[in-house]
Length: 170
Image (cartoon, rainbow, N blue to C red; front, side, top):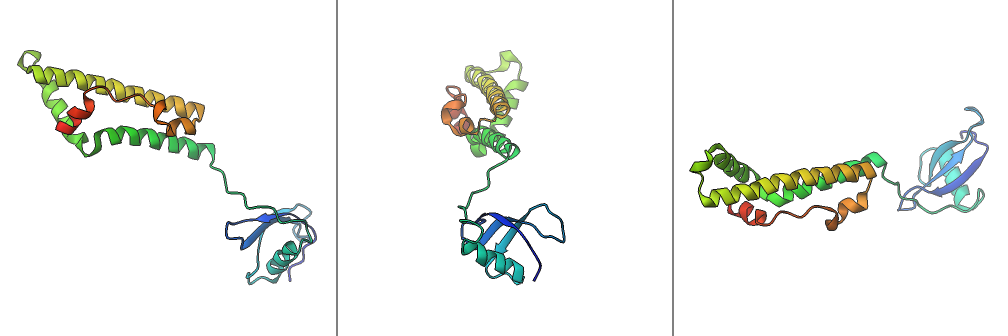
């Protein structure tokens, strides 16, 4: 069995309560306590021994399982994903046909556009401004690391009037 001297800070490592994480000093490595995971059914005798002694309370009460927290980078990536998904959801599968329609209207001379096309173009310009506002809001949320704000519908700019109907018609 591998020799160890001090065991401290035992707590459950997993939700299934099959592993215990603790700090262990191994004299052959040095005096610094190392993070160590012990398991009841581990093939290594010292791991089983530490697990059983932790369960018996020899090193104090085994602390509760603590779920790992997300890093700030992970949270920021989630905010970006939520923002992009909100924009994508507004268009659904109609994004390409919407853009194609916009290109057809925008490529016409203003005098060649019908009243309907002029009205649609105004809605599309508002839609572009909405997307810019969404991206600005997204940047603000990431800057503030505001994951709850990213999840809240009220945090995001509303889709311009008429845009949902226009997208649906494309």
